[in-house]
Image (cartoon, rainbow over all chains, first blue to last red; front, side):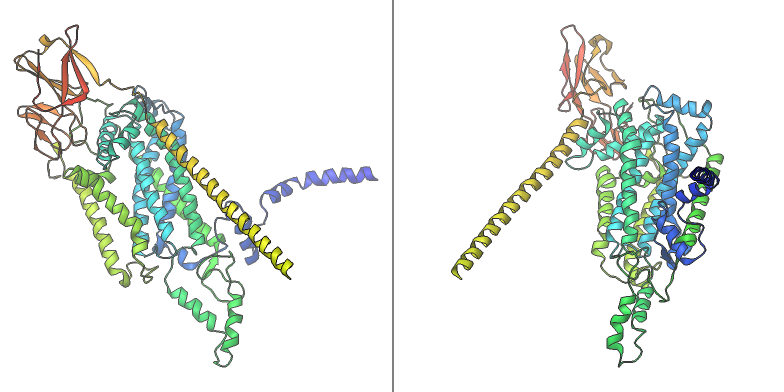
Length: 433
Length: 164
């Protein structure tokens, strides 16, 4: 008797094996009710980064343009392609350039991966900067999101430094002279400039030590720093009450709170009752957020609304990078020739505004003005305490702040255009047509 | 009653002593922890600052004085120095641009930088472009075996020649 039950037990176990394995990994069936939709986000490791419900405003494409998400997906592409490229790269002055040629000639998909890495890097610099502009123009850095803005500015700097360190690794003429110029700019920083330059290069000039140092910074130190900052950035988005949105929602929440008390006579008792029903699902999050009960709100379930939006952005990002990488090859110039700098020697495009300013004054162009600009960015949320104009593009209340910022951005863009198209040999002014 | 009061006072004195001791210990351990953090950060900095570099030595021989005939200006690009010979006098002028470290080329009027268009006269003084400082001059000496030696570690005032 016991024998047969055991047999049937084993048999049942075998029969139910696929289902049991499946349900041990995925705790919920595909959701068909609100409760299941909530628990799908809640119980999945990869999905629980999302709140169970998000405000409709979060999903408006025209509000965020998905720029932060695109930056993150570009970073993912960069990590994957970067790790793959590491299998073939050697950070030695005698081998680095040959390895670039090998990627082109003998490694399967080598040139394609290098293209993807290069174009994603350019894209990430651009998109991270656009994300910063979006957050500024929508006033999204204001209380309580000041610190997340600071983290964002730090991540922009890490992104630029990542791009700068990666620039040296192919060890071609472009790389060598851009880094020679770039590290000399660092040397102009007051007091510690020369020390920083020496620490960066590990020598007085760009050579083997510099290549090794830049490699370690590029593949280990800076990416891990960025991963940490991204994690805190994402975490803060939720803890600061989700994405910023127009204040209108705030007033809606206020009216909701007083709605159960239309009669003046009962309002005194009704208000606390109403308050009791309005609490955040996530515990101590700031600001009006997900409500429980039959309160009408403007939020939708993350599964599937947010997930589909994210998937769409991801697919588009990957598709565009793949297309660009198929169509255009990443540049590779002559191998390093210490004796013959190219004329003109130009930095990557996003540093050309800097290089243009540097051609007027090395200290002010390379250290002074960029330093002031970064200090200004870091300080903005702590000096602009006006709570108005959050969550809308170019809000009227923020006319002054937006004008100043737009001017600075345009000046940088103009300098980049001049440096890219209007500068010839000896950095003299030339006409591109 | 007095006994209870006394006991209470003693208890509060003990409490005060315990709190004071706790404060002191907290203070000591904070100083210890932050001190070690600062020390380890500092030692990391010491670690990544190389004591010896693998690049070119600052002091090197460039050959016999006869290899630099009077009236010539020979640029040794690898060493990033230009050897100037006038009569029996020899000098070494840096060819690393003081602007952003590119190698300046010898031109008719002195030196010109290909990167941002800085110009220098024959003695390395700035005549145009963004360079903030004149090109430095380095110490030249004669080795016992008759070779000229340049020490890029020692800068000499502009116009200081070595008599061969």
